[in-house]
Image (cartoon, rainbow, N blue to C red; front, side):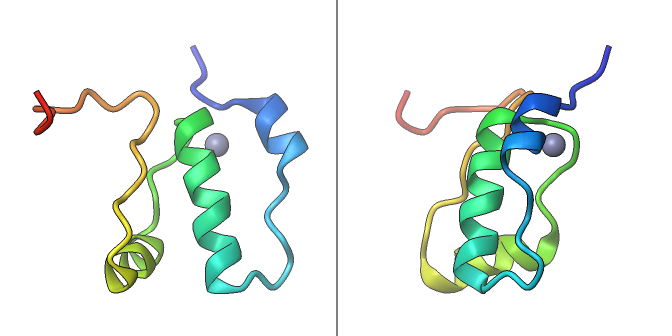
Length: 68
Ligand SMILES: [Zn+2]
């Protein structure tokens, strides 16, 4: 059973030389639609540096939702 969302990947190729904003946008969409791989630490840092909440990762069993 694959967790790769092939259709999403085909529709959303990563740009060749992505800006940090493009990487964040791509990975936010990726996390929402595909669980083939976790968000790289370098991208996680882009979010945290900007104070942007990390997007939820598909397929993650989130331990606890703080909003309850
Ligand atoms: Zn993927």
